[in-house]
Length: 228
Image (cartoon, rainbow, N blue to C red):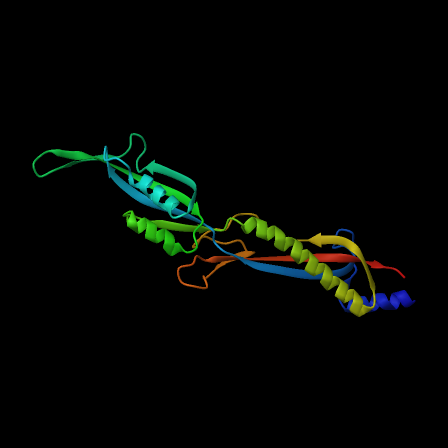
């Protein structure tokens, strides 16, 4: 009788018992939440390159050298011609009728890290004469690792919440009998692409910084009820 009274109080404070095995597990329910902001630490830079054949070091090579001289790390680099093979060429002629050389047009791409602010990268590119269709895309390489940490934190918070409910109801809580943590895989996407519901880009706190990624993870647990 004493245990039945405690159980009734627990139900009023958040204890949910299910009559069907196909429904949620019986016990004391608790919900937890964890969130964190992840700074952008990777930047993908793409720009058009127009160069003359036989002029020595190309612009992509000079940009790569300048980035490394400033202490930035190049994770990936690539170049592709604007047209399918053979590449796009165009001949230029001087006013005297002599051919000045063939122009080769391509798109260069760098994936870099090690910067503190976006302005650092923009300054390096400007000094190398990069002005044609420049595109910068931020990425948050630690997003998946941080999300896993938040999953554990959210579960711990949910367990603590369930134990508080049990304590307030005068019921002894046992071990975890059920855990639900919604998880959406996938990397952060730059605007204007749609973001998964557990993450969102937020404005940088200071000018020149890249948008931070705010991750939110929720968890629901059910604890067993200990009999006296």
